[in-house]
Image (cartoon, rainbow, N blue to C red):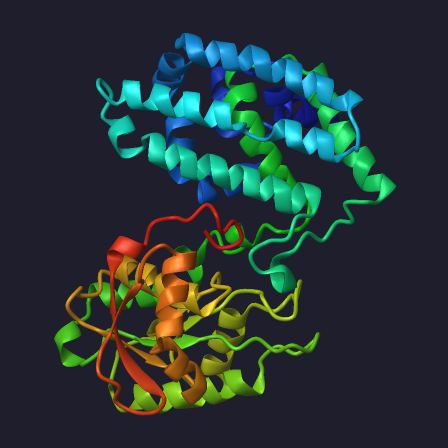
Amino acid sequence: MFRTGLVIICAGLFGAVSPVAAQTIPQGRDHVTESLQRRIFPQFSDIMSNAGLKKTIFSEGDIQKILQDRRMRVADALKCMPAPRCEVEAWKITPDEQRIIGEVFARLAARLPVFRTYGAAQWQRDADAVNYILSVYGEGASPHYPRIDAMTQDATAKDYGQLVSGLQLHALQVAPQPDEDVFSAPIHYAMLMLDMNDRDDAIHFPMLWQEWNAQALHAARNLNWRHYPYSAIIVPGAGPEQAGVALSAMGKFRLMLAVEAFCKGLAPFILVSGGAVHPAQTRYVEAEEMRRALVTRFGIPERNIIMEPYARHTTTNLRNASRQLATLNAPQQQPALIITDQDQSAYIESQTFAQRNQKELGCEPGTLGKRISPFAIPFHPDARCNATDPQDPLDP
């Protein structure tokens, strides 16, 4: 019985299965790395899952030339030093590959509408993100925020070198499909490096809107938003720096302020935002702990709580809150209310924070209204800043 089940489950790796089995039985695919790819590179993943588009792309002579050159470079990487850096470098998308593929996409845009949306500019952004992930989580380069986002493996350790070489040898032994070298291989290795470093934060809550936020989503569908001056009370997380501490003192203070505003009827929801950030590799998710405290300490009903468990910085607290309010279909003209301690509230209002948004997000997640207290400031979300950001793979 066990052997039969194993053959069926792994048939996607080693052979074919019947049409019925293919529809109902898992195919032995790595759902972690595949989910990471879909989360970080959603548009590209949609294109590469379309058989017709893939055939069109790989019928281009320029793509075939890249394919040949890349296979030779990857094979030669096992001979160069220092290892494993040589192998990781070989996985990256070179400047010439980026340029040529961008030109191919630009040509295809003339007859395929999908490449007018996903064109050379988005491809360049995705390719840069792939190389960034490989540099940080494959080679140990410094990330944008090394204190919390750095590689967890030791890039100088012998075991790590053997791991990378093993991945390379395995790839050379498996007969490659055309797309596996030019597109799928670089992204696949980038996702593997995230996984090997236990940096799969981006997919930690796959059922967020089906479970955690389901009651709030249902409530929003039947809500008269005009009964409230604000769409939601946004509470940014304040992660503790001590290992083993679930909720910091500042986090508790921010919740106290938010509950007071909620009980005054200022908004129908409290939106708590924050991922597993402080200290690095903590098992506690700020938003999850704040949500738990709202229910158990303050008696706030789950239908009035929205959990945003990914943000790692104040910038993405607001961007992700904007995304969630869009999911709830909150009125665009209705502001939310950011409630936090007086220091962070003043920082959010500062020019320094506006400059940081432009540098890190490339846009402003929203505009601020006139402050109503030292702790509270209105926020008008801007949906134009809600696009997925592959350069931030832990919270894209």
